[in-house]
Length: 191
Picture (cartoon, rainbow, N blue to C red):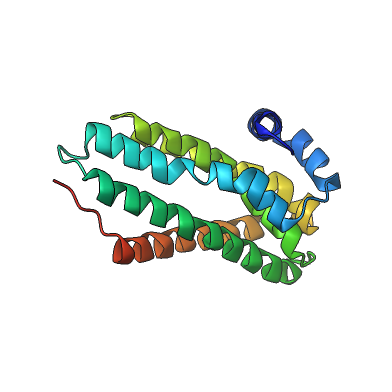
């Protein structure tokens, strides 16, 4: 994955044919740092900056954040989302043996990052007023995750459903913790 063209190809594969894309991903040996630099850093920027631009340009409930405060909040959201994703991956890796899978931090990060793709893309609807409800399309990531789980963490199909629910709970919990910490550091300041 060397350029934007590769990222677009990977995103397209994960959205249109995730089973086939996981076959390709399984054979790759991308390091954690390369995965962050070449994929995660790009896509993880979509939610905070789409939300910032949408609320700054169009407002939220008739209110607009100041440019500086909104940008600061977006930067904090983005900066904290990177270690939060790693923490989710770490817990997935640690939990895998409990579900007869194999612990592997690099593969868990790969699984988490590529499974977040639909949610990151759906967050782009935050740019347009009235379309924010389309964030629900990000739930497609649960399906992408379940397809990649057996390949990346070697979890048997018998344990797939329960492990997917555990990972979903973990992701929602991490999202709530992330939102809380962001609100402490950079509270929303609307005018």
